[in-house]
Amino acid sequence: MAGHDVLAVLPTGAGKSAIYQVPALLLEGLTLVVSPLIALQHDQLEGIEDTRAPQAVAVNSAQRSDDRKRAWQAIRHGEVEYVFLAPEQLAKDNVVDALADEHVSLFVVDEAHCVSAWGHDFRPDYLRLRPLIERLGHPRVLALTATAAPPVRRDIVQQLGMRDSREVIASFDRPNLYLAVERFTDDTDKQQSVIARVRSLTADPETRRGLVYGASRKETEFYAGELAQSGARVAAYHAGMAAADRERVHEQFFADELDVVVATSAFGMGIDKPDVRFVAHTSIPDSVDSYYQQIGRAGRDDRPAEITLFYRPEDLSLQTFLTSSKVPQDALAEVAQALRERAGPVRLSELKDRVQVAAALCTRAVNLLEQAGAVATTPDGQLQYVDSDQTTDEAVRRAVEVAQTHQRLVRSRIEMMRGYAETTGCRRQYLLGYFGEHLGQLCGNCDTCTSGTAKEQPANDGEFAWGSLVRHAEWGNGVVMSIEQDRLTVLFDGVGYKTLSLRAIHEHDLLVPSQRPRP
Image 1 (tube, rainbow, N blue to C red):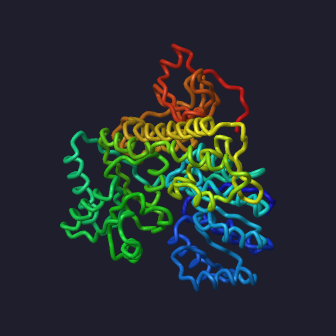
Image 2 (cartoon, helix red, strand yellow):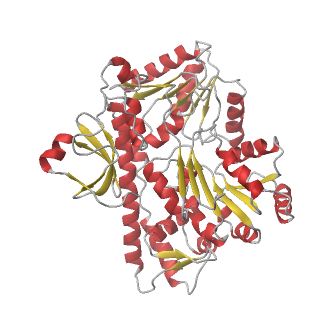
Image 3 (cartoon, rainbow, N blue to C red):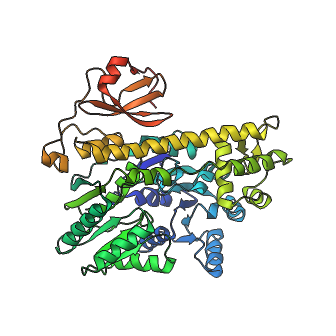
């Protein structure tokens, strides 16, 4: 209400929706809420309908034409306060033109980690929100998410063009979650252990409800079939299923008609069921960000819940493969050439019609070219080649460098997930350190604490303290995220997370204190 743009990182149940629903009543104009999933929009609409708050509408691809027309009519007549849209809707020129005719006073980005190439469930259309915000006159911007590590937070602020922004960050600590990792060398042994453990949990009425996350569609169906044979009420869930089937699983789980859902990461945002007693991962996820969000669906009633990662080091190669998307050089070249040859600005929708590139790939290419400084967005939301003297080859080269930087950051997150799985220190200290939070004592509620391998983390190693700014000759500026007995983890601006041996740091002077201003 003081007029600042705000990034709020708060756990589910902390009242993120209230942060925009209440100010909306006091600000004259529409509140526009960008929400990534139709199911999430539906839940948020129902929540508003159950109160005395003003009317809310959604505009999405699942609606019938008549329903969309009625929604827009209500918007134009000033009958609604809240409008929910997916970012893909905001990629349509007619939708943006219609919103530009209205007075939008608050622009809300829900599940804002999707804005960041660092964030899980990254969607290219989210990167087109910044020019839209400017086209709407830069109303107050509110970015909301439950999970965002420091680089994700920085990226959200930058990608949305937030001005004079403030951050509200809640603690990431969930002390009621028991954290454990079971390590395997043989895949069959791992499968049998997953099945045995989940069967044991579902046999007890106190712990029977939970989530099992698999790395692939095939894996979810395999485990669901195996667990069903033991009498568990279980269903698989993945993006390859029909929308109606996914919705049915979702509804059955919330209605307590299912005990276990075996899912890929597609079963994700918006899952707010308080009595989930366990979350098991059959394979290592792609990042600590994804992992933390998924395990955070357990124990939301503040009662104990069990978190287990079934880890086989060889599984890391699968995540490296899945996250190593090829840089779209051909698409970059075609899009860059089309924009360079264009006499003036062009809308993204028109550009998509002009090039022989899939729509999503075209959006990704535009985003990379814009981040490389070769393309800019005009005040009215159109795209323009920045420098006609710059060759398309040079523009593509710079965009490829941007993409490769993203890849290095992604790979560093996978290595941090390896570090979590293999640490002998307190797992909760490791997790919280990743998110920039320092836990000064052992948690006492993870497998390394109960086994006695965890030792108190020092507040500093004699020279570098937690949170201190440092510089590496090759990797540049960074901040110390965690300190263990024999190593430091540093988050570097350009290359992501790196874990360095304290012995090597001191023997070779790898790090020096940095005097740069803290961001």
